[in-house]
Amino acid sequence: MIEILGERARALAASGRVLVGVAGPPGSGKSTLARELAAHLVATGTPAVVVPMDGFHLGPDDLAEQGLADVKGAPETFDREGLARLLGDIREARRSAVRAPEYDRELHAVVPRRIAVPPQIRVVIAEGNYLGIPGWEDVRRHLDELWHLDVPWAVCRERLVARRVATGREADAAVAWVDRVDAANARLVAAALDSADVVVDGASLVREGEGTSAGPGH
Image (cartoon, rainbow, N blue to C red; front, side, top):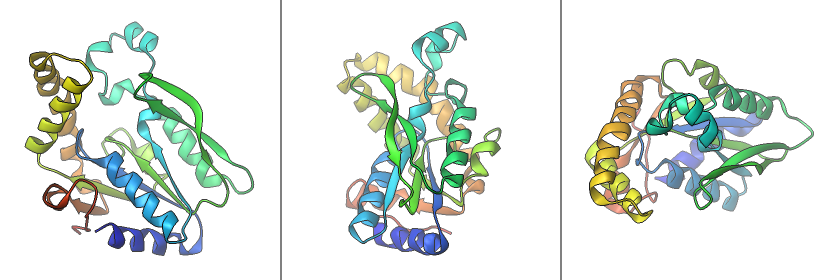
């Protein structure tokens, strides 16, 4: 449950700021879990903020120039080095706020410096698919713990197709994209499960309502 994860985060932050990563396959509910965990921590007296990996999406021009527009969302379509630098800055910051970018889903664009991480924040929740995969060690080393949200691919797939249809895609096109791009990305994330310090049981989220219950798997 959220309370269990909140207790773990507070314990980690007992002696100073802590950076916790929340990873998982596309459509697993990472953003919901991260937001609800941050809200729970704030409500119970521990300042917290979410810093999503999505703020480091490459822009349309970069994607087109690198020939990556048709795999947007794959690891190579993110500014991994920029994310690593930001997490390092957050870890080292003592007296001033660090500003992080955020991906605006209505604008379909990254908004620079939208998220503030002031000095009083105790728990920073970095959220994104690839925080623990091979090749992203420069990101992983800044995280005190990495938590993996484990949700069956069939559930993720249904959510992802519905999400794309809701934003105006034809159903057949949505299914084709999810089965080609998102499924490949999900396999990468699943293969890195052993890099997690905690596995959050996504089945409980499906049974009890998305983002309302979670518990460490190990």
